[in-house]
Image 1 (cartoon, rainbow, N blue to C red):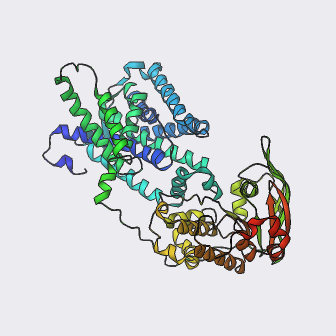
Image 2 (cartoon, helix red, strand yellow):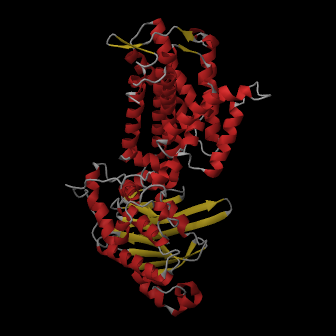
Image 3 (cartoon, rainbow, N blue to C red):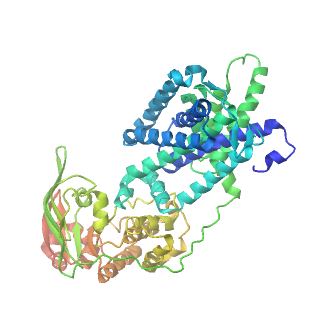
Length: 566
């Protein structure tokens, strides 16, 4: 692309290539925002307009150089993204894309009715871009600059997604709750992705203004916003290079349709939109991952090689001495309408202990864990390591040393196994990547099978491997108290034996555990204390071995003896 203008190709090819580059820049932001972060936006065209109008107005009215107009355009785009994103990104479901349509219409209407921006006529006579006295013009001279910026943006996105903030952004699509359990501020990273996409769109608008030498509201309408999203989806919204492929296919196809459709009888109107609609339906049906998925079949991604040399151990929290009170829960209560799921429960966990919380389905066990982590608001008092958790957020509790392994594992299936592990230590590990080796190798020591699957996507792992990965991810934050919700669920007896063996090993290394289980016999066999929960209240509690072998307990609660440890 950088040398294309030097080749003996028609000027029309250069023009088409510039348009593809400009569109790719916007689609690249949508891949990050929609494909990676899972946030659908129809207003990217409006951000293109912000960059274009800033360049046009300042260049024609004040004669400012291009770099100054770019800086102003980016500042305005960032400001607009922050102001509009702050309320919008708190929405979910279909409300978010609907809100982006409204904001896109509002921004476009403001551009079309501003007296200083020429209303619907826009701004004409924008000077060609010049750097150090060199006139780049609007064709071959501008082409290398456009593609240099586009390729640098792609390189930046590649490095971003393989960084600590990038992994946090990638986790958003997998579920906000699990990301927050690992201490990730989901709103912060939603806003970050939104601002980055707006910046890329504004840069495209800045280049567009100097390329076209004029701007008007129509290229920044909601229709164009839909077209940008179409490009990203067609190419492959989950693949960065899909932004380039989708932009090229749309631009070249649209140009050919403008030539071919008028030749057909009865097609005197604009039928390109109908054709593109049909194409999108076909692609979504037969290639839901976009056209880039076909390229990926014969172009496998190269495995990343990380340098772990010089790794240092993570700083460890000062753990309380064995036997000291670590968790003290007083009368925790959670009610859903008329259903009292947790009824004034009190329990405690001492340092170095495994405490089992057992009971049938619907007893309130998982609700209790969610209340302890702050996922569900509840009444009562929770004291952890001498600190009252009242008013603390989920992120705060992770930083204090709590870690949760949920019943459904909730892994990020489209991310490699090793990236799932690294995300588990998001709050604890702010150092550069090589400092994570010791924690990862510790997990691989516990679960050797995971080391063999380190580059495999988490969604393709077996049930036992997914459970191992979920536990390993929680251990990456070096927690003081590990909350395990049904670790043996759906696993074969031999795997259950291995899992409980690892639980005992963790206790010997100083990790305290609150264990939720229906496999009551296995849970009580490794625990120091046991609580039996039924319909939100404790039916029994006491020393685990006494409860496991008490004939009266087994007779009253037959599920205690129904699942023998493998």
